[in-house]
Amino acid sequence: MQPAKGITRWGKLSSTEECVSPLSYKGPCPRFLKFEKDIKKKKLLENHCSIHWPCMNECEKDYSLQCPEKWGLEDDKNCHPLGTYEGACLLIQDFSNFTNDQKEIWSNKCATTWPCKGWVKDTDGTCYAQKNYVGPCLSRASLINFDEDMKVAFEKLCIVNYPCLRNCKMDQTDPCPKNWILKSNYLGNPESCLPPDNYSGHCGEQTKFIGIDENLKETMEYECGIKWSCADEHSTFINYEEFCPENWTKNGPHCIAPLDYFGPCSKKKIFEGLTSDIKKAYAEECDS
Image (tube, rainbow, N blue to C red):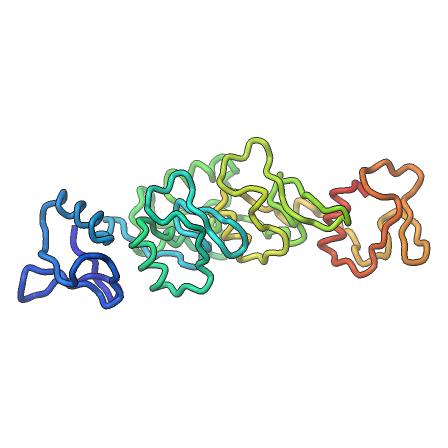
């Protein structure tokens, strides 16, 4: 192990056997520490001084992710510590205005880190690892012929995250992740997404999925262990610009359900002014 280097990291003085802290260090120890070679003493220093030595597989961190490792999404801004988190920072935290340097300082102080950046997918379907990838697999792989089970196995074996495994265009009209259930309020407007019974991740109904963009959806796929449906799974074109749902009758500002409609929602509804996403959510919720 070597002391961390860089602007926000500790450095070794060439003239003495000491390490000097960065100016940003706010821990309880002095700025100059004797350089320790014994691993047990280094671990004691980590705990006492709120510092850390880099892992051998130190990687470029993906600070675009909302939450650090072992923290979960509280809402669209805040993160909360999970049961697996063993650090001392136990309050809900908003990282949205943190710079990358501030996130690094905070994660050092709170005994966690941000996930490594993932692999990059080329136009031919080949995935390339970053040059600092030190996992057990080759630095490139073609996943074109992989089925879903093979991709999951590849992810676990090679330490690859979801964006590279996506092989289709995401369905942007779907408000909830695949197999999640849309929950609407009494007006029929989408409110939240309910996980399926077999979901074992750390996101839940309190996690905000409604209205987020594609980049955040990809981030959530990685952080929550979920997937969004592919656009080609819903190949039938539905014109949400129509005033009323199919087979419903326009009556002034209202739409009236047909006599054979036995869905759970009102048979008289105003759809005027609703967005396509809300109309789609209503159709799924109300079987219209």
